[in-house]
Length: 138
Image 1: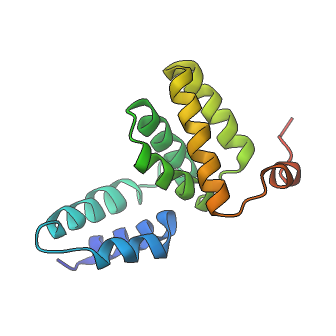
Image 2 (image 1 turned 90 degrees about the vertical axis):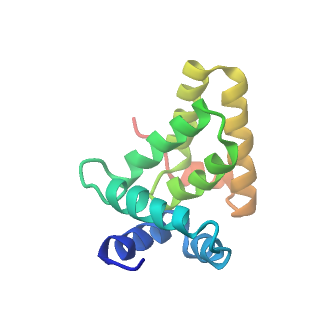
C-alpha cells in the first residue's frame, strides 16, 4: 500500500518519533500487523499530524496529555521523545506535567515525571544544564 499519503505519513512519523524507532517498527511488520501499520501511517501520521492548524509542538503536548490521562505509559515515553524532536524544552514539559498532575492526579503526574527521567537518562540529557541553557520565559 504505497501512495502519496502513506509516504507523507512515513516522513512525518520519522520526523516526530525518529528514524531508528520507525525503521524498527517496520522491520517487525508482518502479514498480521501490516494493515494496522499502514492504517496509522495514513490516518494518524498523514491525515492528523500533517494537518496545518496546530503545530507539531502543540500536537505533542496534546498527545502527552491524552496518553497520561488514559495511562498509556509506553506510548507516553515514546511521545516524550517526539515532543523533544518537535522542539519542546524541559521547562515546557515540566509545566505540562504539573498541569497533568493538577487535572489527572498526583499518581499520574508522578508517572509523567518518572517516565521523563527515564527518557532523559536514555538520551543523556543533563537536566540542570539543559534547563539553565533554556531559561524559563518571563
